[in-house]
Length: 171
Image 1: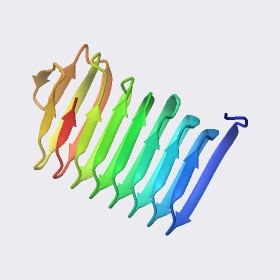
Image 2 (image 1 turned 180 degrees about the vertical axis):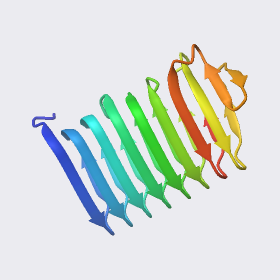
Image 3 (image 1 turned 90 degrees about the horizontal axis):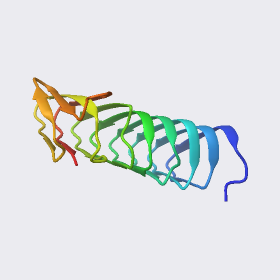
Image 4 (image 1 turned 60 degrees about the horizontal axis):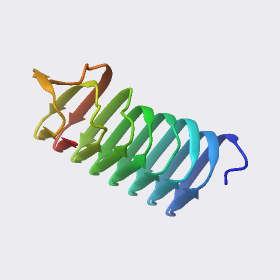
């Protein structure tokens, strides 16, 4: 059980794995070079910031999260959690897998040579703008298409996806 709630946790690491389980904090920031980041079973109520070079990022089973900003160079990102209101993901040479129970209010994704696999609820309601040099977009959610914009449901939330050479799949 989580007994203490901290305002901020900040972790910097070089050539080591950061494994965090069962913490409670308003803000959590982690920066690594040559090391994995694993964050699970935790309550980060406001802001999650992760920056990784040459390491994967795994986030699993978090409570409601207000904002997330996650960036990797040469590392994959795996997110499996309930809800992130506002999310920004940037990756160079890394794939991103995201599975959330509730859709984002705002979502931004930028990739150079990385794929995005996004699992969202069937009640998805967003306007998604997709731009890519050589990547493909696919979805099994019903959507209307207007140029580079895909409108799901009534289109109330904003999603922006940019990819140089990565494919995007929403299911």
